[in-house]
Image (cartoon, rainbow, N blue to C red; front, side, top):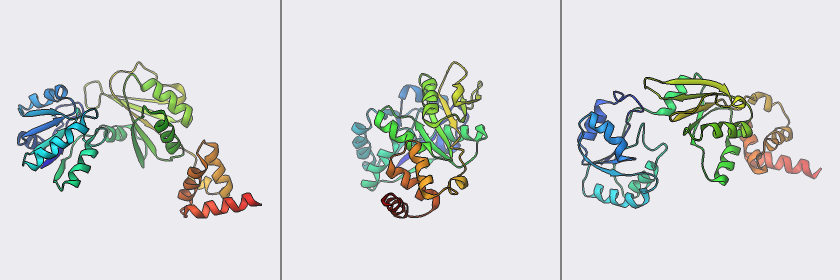
Length: 269
């Protein structure tokens, strides 16, 4: 059996009895960084075999984990902080476990982006984006996908990327209200509000959750436009034609081909 165990995101007391019990009863603990995890594990006198399992080695380590589970080992997987399977390769491991018919479960607990969203005071619904991708093609597609979203957007950002991330989001999304949360649950927990146009107003320190309000153009206002005007609104935002058609169809609650056929007919005239 494998358990995905949530660990504290700052304050070491933010851990459940069940999580401690599960880790104590594990044969092996998979860690994003064994050195970081030792601080937490030593605090609760948990002495187990630790194996590194992270985005740089999971392809090599996953078959070994599968074999240990088949041999009857009880394994826990933890990240440096928070809930597994969000910004780490837990989902790939689950895929392989399902293929092999192996059981797994989760021990719930702290999650940085969810707690930061609660502290921001911004409204639901929200979309968790995570870290912006390094790959330029993936980044361009992502920014196009989220540009017209009305929901609150939540990102993770490292201190050395925060200023450039904010500048990029302003360039691609326009000026919006934003909020950063850092040092969650720690002594120097900090919430900072600003507009993307202003940039982040302080010297970045620590890991950040960046929360940005969604596109504030009212959906009802968009649906008061003609289909072509609605379509052109998204094209002018930089969306490819096909994506713009899909977004209009989603806004209006109709099939994509209805919008496509309507636009094709108008272009023939």
